Image (cartoon, rainbow, N blue to C red; front, side, top):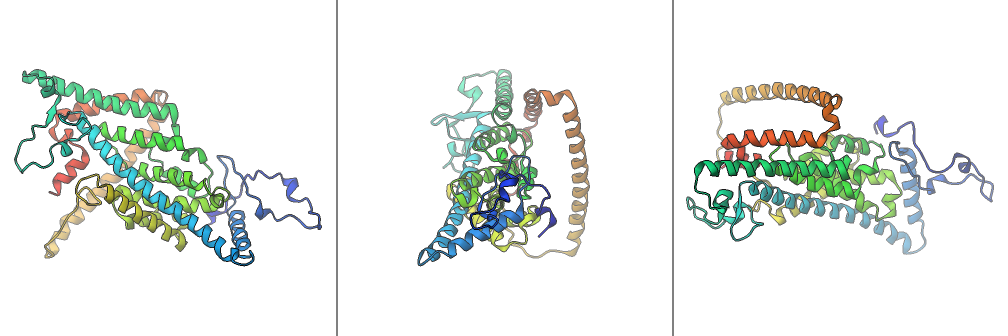
Length: 408
């Protein structure tokens, strides 16, 4: 195990003098039977937590008769129950977030005449190729405006106003009710899995605001995605479920092993790839990369999350992903590697430049007056993004729709 899993400082709630008080038989008390409670901002004692778990399992197996056989099985079933429920929860939540984002995004341009809560694809389903959809009404058609100039002004006005409303509402909810839901959340999740205590980051209120704010922010048209936030949402779900059972709520090490599986499930839903979730755990969440049981839980949670996503079928294609490539021709030429190598080099250089630019902008924002007005900053950014996007035809389309068009 890596040295980072054994921090120097931990903050148990048990007073130091109580740890060394002799029992009635003249021995020191077995402190591994006493759960430790940590404050936010401290680090857990991995050696203590794992020793306490081994002692608890040994005590269960030492029970007389059938209890010694059934109690460990019951404990194991609780663990898998949390893993399965987390996978189902994030799969269904991720699917309905996709549906909500699609509906809110289409609402900026119009609505369905026979059902307000239908998005454009659902409203125009069943049509033959090339057939015009008369059930989907733009806002200019809904208000029966005939002037082309007024139609353009009205469509632009509603498009920009709703984008500002969505983004502004998301930022207001985060600032007012859940400050810890303000960004992707992956750096904090990695710190928590490494032993840092930050229970407020995984609260139910953070889960709710993160999910709602994510849908509103993506639907506003801002250049952001749901991949990172879904990891945070999945960990919040697992944290809430873990509090129902004392074997997790009273042992921080076991709780973090559940969170690692939940993080993998979040990646699985974001990309429609169970193996991608496990690989994410191996690459990014290296705290448990050497523990086979944790990786198996991550795979099971990822697979169940992917199946739940496909069951809801948010894209209407019965597929895990919005688009996929079906290559029926296996013949290729060696010279084709040259442009691909060029694209890889260009992509790497541009990626490094963008990361550097992002760091500089983040430092500027933190040290400028913008840091004191986060809602105003989001409103201005969304207004400029929506206004520029409306002038470019491809800018009106969501990123997922553009990528789907490239693969059709």
